[in-house]
Amino acid sequence: MIRTLTLAALCLGLAGPLAAQEVTLRLHQFLPETSFVPAQILNPWIDSVEAASGGRIEVQHYPAMQLGGKPGDLVDQVVDGVVDIIWTLPGYTPGRFPRTEVFELPFMVADAEAASAAFWDLAQSDMVATDFADLHLLGAWVHGPGVIHASKPVAKVEDLAGLKLRGPSRVTTKLLEQLGATAVGMPVPAVPEALSKGTIDGALLPWEVSASLKVGEIVHNHTEFAGPSIYTATFILAMNRDAYEGLPDDLKAAIDSASGAAFSAQAGKLQQAEDVPSRAVAEKLGNAIVTIPAVETPVWEAAAAPAIDAWVAEISAQGIDGQALLEKARAGISAHSR
Image 1: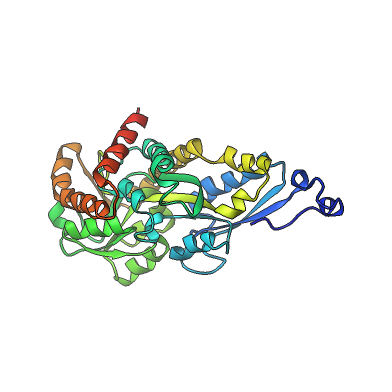
Image 2 (image 1 turned 180 degrees about the horizontal axis):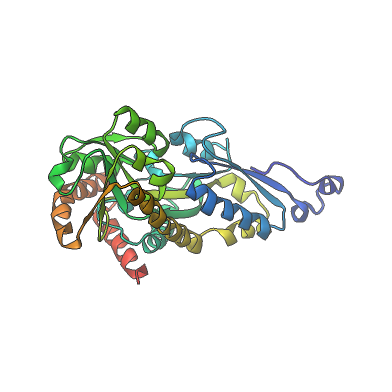
């Protein structure tokens, strides 16, 4: 929200206030500031906005839910104006952003940069006036290929039977149930404690965040896919609509210059690049890493197909053409892939 006006503007009776306006915005999110996304994506975005505004915008970063609430509360916090900007997973508020779920379907994503570019494009064409009507969208991206981290080896679909696995979203938990696992939905900060206590046997996470959560120190088996991965989660950086629209044009331009298509694609690229050192941590621990070869992916895809069909039917029942959305998402990823 717009918090302060400069004293000079007030003394001028707001005769020329917009040029002198100074704004403080509060960004709230769920991970510690030292985690990869806050440190390497959100903080640089903040620096870019502040620099582009000539110092007239200050973005205060509140990590790890410091302003209160749970990760699932973030969307309401920004819509209600409790905070000005949030970074979150749409999947933490099940059913609220149905169109975003298309990028969370199984075996959609191998390249996070291409998928993130496609996500931003599809958001502009199909989601800004629908799913995101109450927000001003600043960025939309996905992480790198998802990985199964578990207490026992998972080399084939049948190995999932009976495992209690964390999923980040409604789509992913339904997929896990389809594949024979017991799905447990929870935000990522809750994963280490749940693993330590045996509440879950494993979790679906990208390599990138697994190292900072020390997942490889708790469970010692990891299953990745040589091609498109078993799942991907979506992220959004979003602003209170009134706060954005109340800004003068030059400060809107400062925010816009750091946001949008290029920012979204770069965020996905950076997250996937961080998979490499995080995977190396698991290797150094001596953990077992199973890589499902591309030739075996069709077996997994066949097992997952009913979950995709069910999603298409469910979202179509809401008046959204699920099949058309799926085809647009796949075409967008293909178009942005190299």
